[in-house]
Image 1 (cartoon, rainbow, N blue to C red):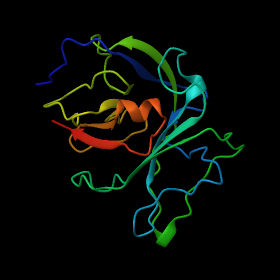
Image 2: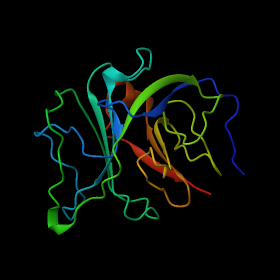
Image 3: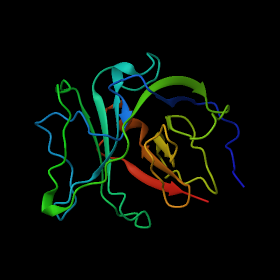
Amino acid sequence: MIKRNSKISNRAIQLIKTNQPHYSKFGGTPGLPENIPWPSDTKGRELNFLTQIHCPELPATSGLPKNGTLFVFYDTGSLTDYSNPLEVIYTTDPLPAHNRTPAAENGIKPITYRETFLTFKMLQTAKTPAAPHHQLLGKSYDIQRNTRPAGYTLLLQLDSDTSEDGPRWMWYDAGLLYFWIKPEDLAAKRFDRIKLTRDYC
């Protein structure tokens, strides 16, 4: 049975899929500036690109940076291993005219999820939006348990989404990915200290 958080006071940002082009999106290829290396694991294999959040497209009162772009990369090859490489990049460099494509280092090409453009809506997280539960900030949408590490707050929540209009990804057994950050790191725009947890049916 799905368990929903109660006594929720934090506001959150719902990620809403749209057909209209935006800089913010799931999947496809990222607008990662050329001067930033594509993240890879210790064996040189490139990580899968999940999402980019272009901060000027966020609501003005979001509490996130007003400029710059967040890029989220993760090795989704084995979701049973919590040690899978993860990298969240924040940069204020201008987005390039053309998106980056992976170089298929060591002959292994990362998974490319379906490009899905995003818009955003502020909400009270007590009013949980209909699935898929894609969200920035606020309280997590928990399936079986709350996986928040002590001292951390939710930065990003990505739900399984195999719909035709979505990125078509599945996290284990219809689960969710949670990206956590310490409040002081969020205030300092230190997005390189993220912790990831998962919950599933």
